[in-house]
Length: 165
Image (cartoon, rainbow, N blue to C red; front, side, top):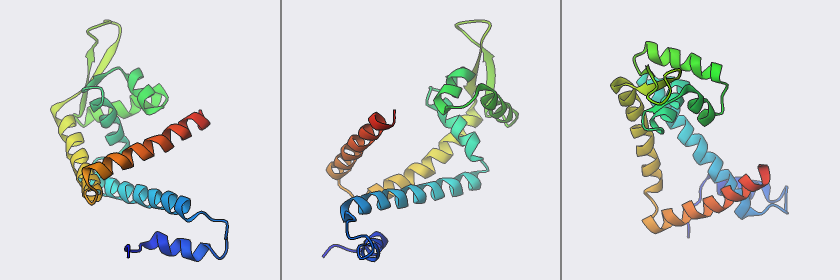
């Protein structure tokens, strides 16, 4: 017999109320929601312990994803934010010594933003803790099962992207 979790009990509670409820759909969606909340809680706790506000981490993460150097406009696009909001974040990160503004090597009228060693270290410390928890959770699956899960979730994500624009 497969071990039962809270979602199984949730479904049992709702089936008499909603007999048309598909337990597989409800189970998958509820479990994705539970895991998302769990990972967000771990991330928030880790960032708090590191003294790194979530918005600063998100900005460092976007910058790290561009190999540590980008224009403020590229970061605004990456984070779907107004450029003025990104500027305020960059000002705070610069005061903390996590980023520096440098002249662009492509266009001297432009300024690029670059991660400093301290910024990279702060980002890396956070991503390491978050990544450890992701690996801990998914470590109960075999590599083939993880690949299958990722492929199935990709299919669902692609369908959502097509239908929501």
